[in-house]
Length: 456
Image 1: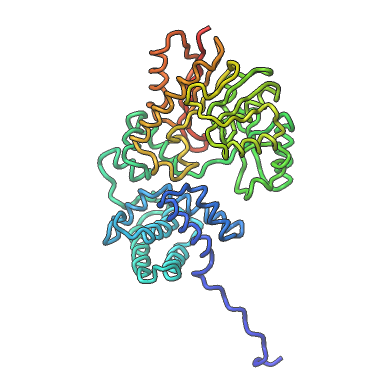
Image 2: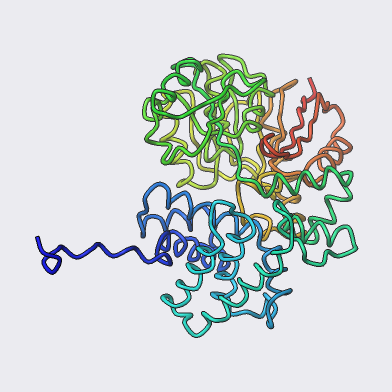
């Protein structure tokens, strides 16, 4: 075949287009969250609109969640490098700069050149062409500023760090100033630093094995056969932690058969505090989405009653679906507001779990936007709700019954201070135990639990 008749060579892909759709998905998620959406819902919606290969799906998730967690620090870089402060930037540009800066500062697997070129390409293609030079200039300025640093430099270096300890922690840990100040009141400095580190790491993916249907060893073997590693969680007889990324969990062995549920390792410690017994009548007062209700049913061997209450019928529908999947018949969902006296009728309960609505400050790694939603005023409103819920439980519990008050927050006002106030006003109630677990790297979410006993 002559040279003139040879088939044309396949053109090389545009480097700026590789992984571009994953980054566009992440950028749209950042904009949606800034407008009020929740990260998980916005990400799910955008991934449905733009189906991606598993690797690109993982990249979009990492960039979106990471940039939302690091919002304060990324704003600090814009303030240091740009002519206009982060707060005054047009929102689409601000979040696009966050996308590019996050890749430069936090993702070692993304080459700097790819981070810059793809971010500029998004600006050109998605309505910010006039500002593409601004994007290019600021990202390259970040690279120049960090070029003299040694490998492994902290992502805030060489930004000027405030001398005030709370302001410094807020910048370096990407936390709201009020939360940084609170952490330094509640914890020693090293504890506050550990909290910030844990809040900015992707959370572990933990499972709770349904021991009524299968053993933990059988689940480990089935997952291994599917190429997914799982390790037992120390101290949790039915807990597993998955290694690596596993894609859509519903496609893993055992999900459809009800062999396991997704539940953080620390959440798996709450239901056993009730010490529920087969045949008892139990109440989960704020039940949806149902992880603890199903755990209670498993603990009593599905022999007894677990009344699972929630205000949202839609969320209870998910609980019903999960109970059906797990083969649990003891759960009785009830749509009601547990804070309203008389909303939950029937015979007294032997044991009550009040997993109260809270600020979620123990789950910041799992819910990237939570730190930016919550305010001190919001916490004050939650404390009033938590106390009203606790008071509403009193007539529902049998004499000498056990009540577990739990939250997934670390704020003392929602936890130990609330319980101390309750006990001071209710003679005869006993505090059997209480614990505050602080989030730490590879240690699960933060939570509080108090085990109370009613008068006999």
